[in-house]
Image (tube, rainbow, N blue to C red; front, side, top):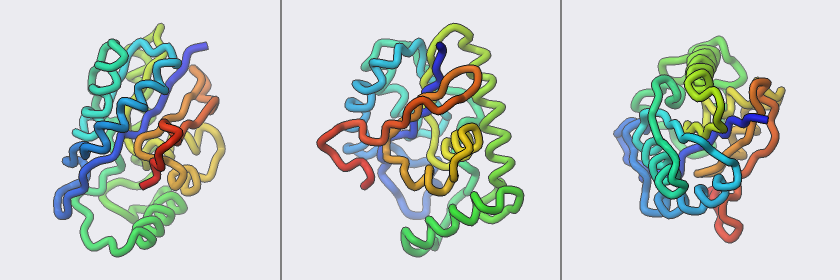
Length: 196
């Protein structure tokens, strides 16, 4: 059975006033990628494809270099289009906004893209990646919100709860071609708390 492994990028260095799409990995994020590559080594990957956002590219490059497999980027695998979101308040306020985004998928409630639009764009990009790698297990390095949208809809899960469960980094293994959720790995290194 072929598999699609959706990977949430590793821990970025957050910079206030700069769009999250421009953030790079932190030193800790780089370190966590080594443990991520170790866990992904059992997946029999033929390629790593990432979104074009810096933190995803860096995550994918470290994994591909560690595993000695090809790496490339692909369009439209990026996060929900939020732009530069300022004054989100507390973590709880941000989580409430994202929950509202998931609960009202056809309504523009956060950023420049509805949940339905983000899901449709991401699903088309995933289909294109799969078509471009017809024989291999593929890891796609992407972002928490679109990853949660895609998997929750494929598996019939609550997207808010799924999104809140995702660590930096983490991954989920889906069967191809039916996108059945086979496994979710949030603890890529047993001794570390990756929810920070």
